[in-house]
Length: 361
Image: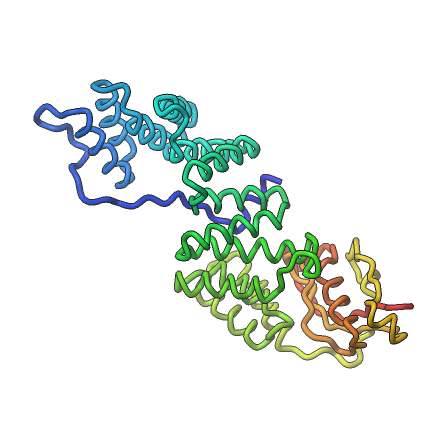
């Protein structure tokens, strides 16, 4: 579960640099606790965490009840991955504010998140959101990542959307949203129950790219999501990814997918049952739609399918359909298939096959 957190999902604790301030050198004249706090804050925003710690400790020595100094001290230790001291400082800040300090709760949430203590992290983020009157986009974003890691994709989608609603400028959150939607469609309840569609994921990836400009991971995700929706656009977007990330570990595999998309199906190739395709370990059962049953429609839907290196099956096109909603059912069944890609030359390879899904009434 926890390994999924690091796969393509990015979390940022946003801070705004309030302005230029003194450097890390010690002041030459006496300062107040508030001046030390201000210097510590500026050094924190400048990512000079050792300097910030020194200034904040001076502030606390002069004024131990200065909760904000304890908060920034805790966050400075957090940025240095000294989680034990970070927790002590953040808990002190909370105690001084009678536990009513949303930023410190958020900091504690990030601390538990990094320590892989999901339930504790969720509790802290929810408290931070409540104390902020429901408006805390960073907290909603990280909550979404936690839910994603727990395969609670519907809740992840809701959290990412809440973060975007509260702060529309956030390419990483749009990227996270696109990933959560894809997983909901592939592993979760599916489009009929969840209310999300493949185009929702595509739109999220496009928004992420629009906001950042150059975003290779979103470019790749967009290109792969477009397969079967707009194959020419998929080829274009994947080509842009290869240009943007020429040293990417999967560059050759993406180029292989581009070639497979350009190549037509072999008219002499045999059509295989989805569940009998080599290395397919699980294919979900399909049921005819009510409309097909009413009209007594049965038979096979034939699809051109890319079995990709990332263990995802993607429908390139419908070769022979039946209509009455059966084509869409067949496409969803392919997207949910489980398989292991072939290994060629030491790397996982993609392949294109013709498969059929049978419908009987």
